[in-house]
Structures are given as C-alpha cells and as structure tokens.
Image (cartoon, rainbow, N blue to C red; front, side, top):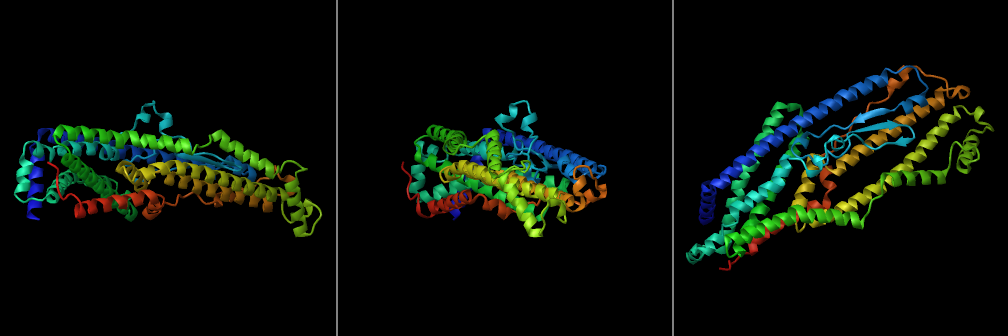
Amino acid sequence: MNSIKNIIAVEWKNIIRTKTAMVLIAVFAVLLLFSAFIGIENKVEQNSIRQKYQEQVHDDYVNQPDRNPHRVSHYGYLVFRERPALSFFEFGIESFAGNSVFLEAHRQNTVNLSEAGFSNGMLRFGELSMALILQLLVPLFIFFIGYGTLADLKSNGVLKIMLAQGISAKKLIWGKTLGIFSFTTAVFIGAVLLIFTIAFAVYPEELTTEVVMRSIFAVGLYTLYFFICSWVTVVVSAKSSRGGTALICLIVLWMLCGIILPKMAQNIGQGIYPAISKLEFETNITEDLEKVGDSHNPDDVYYNRFKAKTLAEFGVNDVKDLPFNYVGHLMAEGERITTELYRAHFDELITTYAKQNSIASYLSFVNPYPMLRNLSMAVTGTDMAHYIDFQKQTEAYRYKQTQYFNELHKHEIDAEHSGTQRLDKSRFKERETFQYNKRGLFWALSNQFTTLFALFFWAILMMSSFAFGFKKIKL
C-alpha cells in the first residue's frame, strides 16, 4: 500500500512540474467558469421570460368575456416549459426542443419555439457547456498528462529497474491510474462542486432534495468517467514502447470514441429505424380518423350508431328529447376518438425514436462517452424522455380541459342555441391551471436501463482488471 501511495505522490509531483499541464488547467478553469456563467444566466433569463408570458397568458385567459364554452376551448391556452435546475450544467436537448405548446380542442399541437430556431445557425456546431468540457476536453487533458507515465519509463530503462526492485506491474498500473485520476478529480470535480455551491447559494430556491440527489449522481458519474479515462491512458501507455506512440493512439481513440462512433451510431439508428415526417404523422392520423367516421356527415355509419345507442340508452326517439345537449355529447365522443388515435400514433413514433437511440445505448458497452452523455442528460432532466413526458402531460391536460368544456356545453347550453348561447366568464375560471409534475431521479434512470447497465459493466470491468489483470508489463 505504501508503494502505491508513493507512486501516486510521484505522479502528482510530475504533473504539477509540467508547465503545459498547469496552463491547460488554467484554460479549462476559465472555460468552466465561463460556461457556468453563461449557463446560469441563460437558464435564469429563459425561465424568467417564460414565467412572465405564462402569467400574461393566464391573465388574458381568465379575463376573457362571456363566451360559448366551445369557443373557449378553441380560444386555447399556451403552456411554457420550464428549464430544469441543472440545465445550466448540462444543456442536453434544451436548445433544440421547443419550450411552448398551444392547447386547443380537436387538435394536438407540437412544442414550438426552440432557441435553435431563433439562432444564427452556429448552434448546430454545439454549445460550450460545463458537461461538454468534462465529457470531451478533460479526457484530452488526462491523455496528455498520462500518455508517457509508463511508456517513457520503459523507453529510458527506468521501468526495468523499478520492476527489478520488486514493484509489481499491478501496483505500478494501479498507482499510476490512481495518481492521474485523483489529480484530475481534485481539480475538475472540485471546480464543479465549487460552481454548484455558488450557483445554489445565489439561487437557493432551486435547491431541493431531488436536485441534490441528481447532483450527487452526476458528480459520481463524471468521477467514474475520469477513472475510466485514467485507466485507459495508463493501459495504452503500458502497451506502448514510446510516449509519442501512446499519445497518437490516445488521440485517435479520443476522435473515435468522442466523434466518429457516436455519429455512426446516430446514422445507423436512423437508417435501420427511419422515422416519419411531421406531415406523414398528421396524415396518418387523419386517414385513421376518416376510417372511424365523420361527425359532421349526417350519413356517417359510426356516428349514426353512436346516436342510436344514445337514444336507446335514454329511451327517446329524438335528440331533442335527451336530458342534455346532444351536440356537447357528440363533441366529447369526437374528442375521445381523436385523442386515442393521436396517442397511439405518438407512442408509435416515440418507440421509433427509442429504437434509434438504442444503438448509442448498446455502444456504451465499448465506448464510455455515449454512456456518460446519455446518463448526464437523464439525471439533469435535459434528455428526450423528460421532453416527451412534458408533451404527454400537456396533452393529458388539454384533453381533460376540452372534455370539461364539452360537459359544460352538454349540460348548460340550450340545444336550440348551441352555437350562440354564452356562459358567464366566471365558469371558465374554475378550470385548473397546468402544473408540470416533475419526475424523480429514479424515473429518469428507469428510462436509461441499457445505459445504466453499461455503467455497471464499466465499474465491474475496472475492479476486475485490477483484481485479476496486469500481472506483468511487456518491456
């Protein structure tokens, strides 16, 4: 154990003595602070703007004049999506996903107004977030400070002397890995913890138990990632005859794992599981709706059966004799059918997207970068699953409110004045306002089962390699 501690201490001294390493630390520290400042400012500003317009939409809605309930349902309601507390750290799909959705009767609208839609086009090249720095730039730093850790000792003959003195290959690799890992963790994870502390001290209202749990998991996730990168660096250095060879191998590996393979996985997923366009999606729903029936067609088979069933249920021969307004009853049935068809097609589309993303999830077993990226977005609430969950919750709210107005039309609007009679505006204030039900950490992780399994695979691989592997180093 003492020999491992000595190796770690020597590794720290060697890194600190390297001027280039110190310059890189300073540059990365500035980048982290800059990205944190931009991320926090953007999140606070976006949420402030969305809250402002949400309140304005609500005020306009509750202050509308007396109206027919069906007109109110078409008047609609605009809902804005709040950015998650940790989105300043990991942007995820936040800039590309829409942030507002217009809710109205008989129609399911998509979430619109993404930041990317208003950008000058540079956004497609990526944004500098804290997560991006830790995911792609810090591994380069680890490769730089560690590429020669064993290869240089091998080339100058020092490694042979150390092995002859009784230091085992396992202890050397274990000590070198821990030395690089502990230094990197102390610098960069320490910086992240400091930034998190300052951010939540300035905005304490964002700090909840759930956010703390997500933050702890994120820190642990990146810590394991740094350990994997340190381990890979030392292994490549041990297998290389010279430091230059090790550095070239590590840079190629970085390009392969960080750029080429993730892009290939995305293209392969889209090729194997192609998704339909928005126009095709809406066309398919319309075609299925036409197969069911048209409530505006007096000769429609389905709605004639529905009408006959309703009349028989209440023992009358004409809709005028029903104890309620049949138009409202008919609209409620039409809304039910439209919603069921939409949800079926929507679930089918989401399944296709999930299959596309599954390629990257399986890639996580050989490449830790997509594993980190997927789990990082999941724990910060900036992944596709949280975005889809928002869409589903707004759709459920839209359907509930539309049926509420259909019930008003059914029971409080006279059948002879179905299109002209108005209700007092106070009736429209009785509706519930939309509140997004924020999901917990375990829900977020449950959507990343394959990637989570890859995380455990890498953890077990690391432990197994030090327990059973590296009994000797080829000189």
